[in-house]
Amino acid sequence: MSTIKISALTEKSTLAGTEEVLINDSGTSKKFSTQRFLDIKTGAETAETGAETAETNASTSATNAASSATSASSSATSATTQASNAATSATAAATSETNALGYNGILSNYAALVTDYGSITDSAASPTDYGTLT
Image (tube, rainbow, N blue to C red; front, side):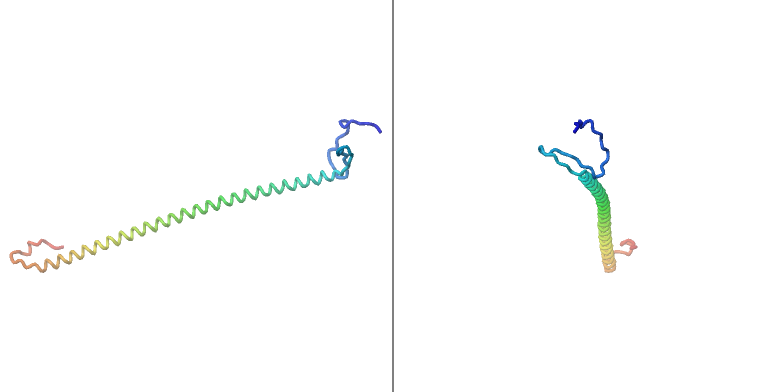
């Protein structure tokens, strides 16, 4: 048998899976099919595709979460605006009530003055002394 250096061997660039490879395992020569390399390569490619899909799904989930957060923030802003408007309306209603009570008080005082004016019996006073009621 002739001896050939490994560096002198021609390179095989593609594997069909039917070739056999010889290895030295702790002094014992063993052979195995190149199909094992191809199975490992296929498994690695499948794992890579799965990782890329998981990355895409994670990115989509992050986008959806950001969109949901924006929507929630918008809803919170709307709720705050509605609460502020309700408080403003309540303040306006209270102001209207206060104004109405004050107007009713003025009317009561006016009625009392008219009643008092009608009951004045000072004989020295003339009607022009009391001013003009409007």
